[in-house]
Length: 213
Length: 387
Image 1 (cartoon, rainbow over the protein chains, first blue to last red):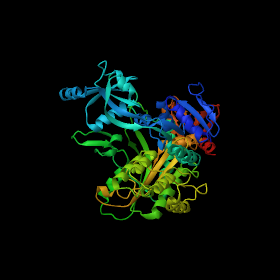
Image 2 (cartoon, rainbow over the protein chains, first blue to last red):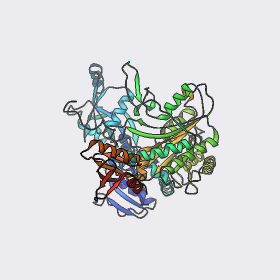
Image 3 (tube, each protein chain N blue to C red):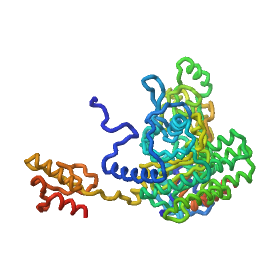
Image 4 (cartoon, chains in turn yellow, red):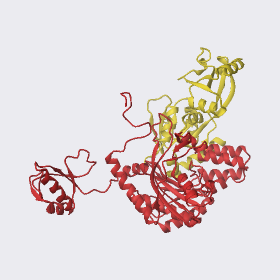
C-alpha cells in the first residue's frame, strides 16, 4: 500500500501547518513554500502541495488521505470529508460587510427593490447564509478583491473572509454580521480514515495534543 | 428536437453501454442469487414518491406533478420500503424479507460531475430484532460482496452503532446532543467535540469520546459490537479470519438509523455499501416495526471489482452467421444451429462487448463454412464449442 498522502494548502496556512507537523515529529524538510516540487517524500507520509480550494477535492475523492485545510475552504466547497482536529491556527471569519454608514440606505433599497446585490469570492457560503436568513440577494461572483465592489457600484454588500479586518477598514467597510468562524482543520478521506485508522490515529492524537497545548 | 438540443443525457445521468452493462448484469445476478438464498424476495417500489421539505430535501430531485402535488424521484429505497410495509403489510405482523435492485436518484451540485443516478442492490429485514438479526444482515452483506467477486478483508466491513456513539455524549442536554450527532453525520468529529466541550461536557468523558472516535481502537464501548461481529462470522466465516472491524466513528449521513450501522469500504472505490438498524422509520408511517437492512452501490462495487482486475466469467461464444442467397436455407440453418445449443446472430454484430465470436457462412440448411474454410454441421460445431 502506498504511504499516507498528506495534502497541504499552499498559501497563508502553509508555514503554520509545517510547524505543527514538525512539532509532532514528521519530516517536512523536503517541503519548501513557494518551491516547484509539489510531491515530496516525507518518510512515513508523502506530501502533496496544492491550492487551498483543490485540497478539499483531493481529500474528498481520495487522491490524498489527509490534509490540513481551513474550515473556510470546507464550508465553501461542501466537500464530504472527516474533520478530525481543530488545529486552532489560521483564524478568520466569514462576514457580511457594507460601506460604513450605508446599512440603513441598503435596507431602504431592499424595501423598495426587494433584493440586494452581494459580491463575493464565496458564492456557496453567501447563498446559504442569505437563504437561511430568508433575505433575497443576487450573488455577484468575483475572483478577487470583493471589498472594492461596493466602492465601484458593483454590489451593495460583500461576503468576505477577514482575519484582522484591516482590509475592510481601509476600504471603509463595516461588518454587518458574522456568518461563521474558521480555523485550520486536520481532515481525512472517509474511506482512508476507516481503512487506515491504525496509521492515522497516532497522527490525530499527536496533533490534538499539540493543538490543545 | 431542435438543433440546439444537447446530444448527451442530462447532467449527472449517463448511458451504460454493453461492455459495462454485461458486467453489471453478472454482478446483479450474483447479488440476487445471494439474497434469494437467504430467503429474501424481490419487490419493485415505484420510481416516484411524494416530495417533502424535510432536511433530506436538498438532495432530492423533486418536481411538480400535473395535479400540482410535489413528487420526488425516490432518493432511497429503504424509505420507500418502510412506507410500503407500513401501508400494504399493516395487518401482517410476521417477519418480512424483502430485496431490490433498482436505481435511486440524488441531487448533486452542478459542475461537480457527481452522478445523480445510483444503482442500489439491497435487502430489508422487517420484524427482525436483536443481535441475531443484526448479525444475520451483517453476514449477508459480507457474503453478497464475496459472491459478487470482492475479496472481503479484515477492514472491508466497518461496524458502528448510532446508539453507542450517541451514548458517548449521554451527559449532554437533548438539543446539544442533536447538534453533536448532526455534526458527526456530516463527518465533523472536531466540530462535534468542540460543541460538546462548549456545552460543558466533563473532561474525562470528552477524552473518552475522542478516543472512541479518533483513537487506534474504538475502546471498551465497542464490546457490544464485537459480539455481533463474532456472531456474524459464525453465520458467514468468510475467506479471512477476523473480518469486520468495530468502529464507533462510522456514522452514516442518513438520519434514520437507530442501532447498529455498517459500511463496506474499498481503497479505490470508497464506500460501496452501507446499512443498519432503523427501528423508528416504519413507525413514522404509522405502524412501528423493528427493521434492519443494507444497500450496495452496484456501480461502486463494480469499480472496486475492476480495480482488483475482476472480469466476468466468459460467455459461450456467439456464432455470427453470414446469409447465403437462399433465404429459406439461411433461416433453417440458423434454426438448426440454435437447436444444436449454439448462440447465433444472423448478420453482423458490430458491438460485441468483449464476447468471443465465431464467424460462419451458410452453405445449406445444416452446414456452414467457418472463417478458416472448414465446412461443418450444426451438431459438430455445437459439440466443438461445448467442449
